[in-house]
Image 1 (cartoon, rainbow, N blue to C red):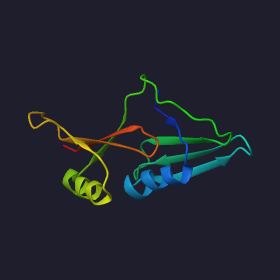
Image 2: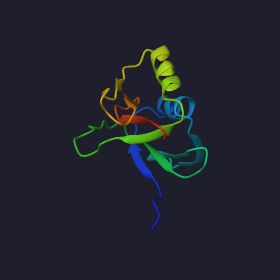
Image 3: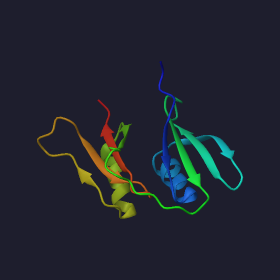
Image 4: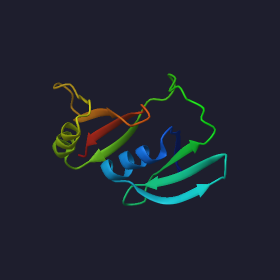
Length: 121
């Protein structure tokens, strides 16, 4: 088997697309508008290896993140550049502990989902 995608529900599609495309560097590869029900937008990394499906339900319902979902994780070749960008935007972030063998930060997307950005090895 091969992993197809991860779906997350979003409350503001344009703000979420700005975060994942402009900041995270993902690219929109497909969009499906299901009328008054919802809009599905599929994003991928530049290599096309992984997809995230954004589901925007148009009925105005709100969502709670709950405690089952952990986070989405992304690799970067330059964590310090990402941190500088996050700081320039005035966003909150949490760094890995100095004693950790991995270097990463956690931020939140516009919907409150935790995003881990790891320094590629």
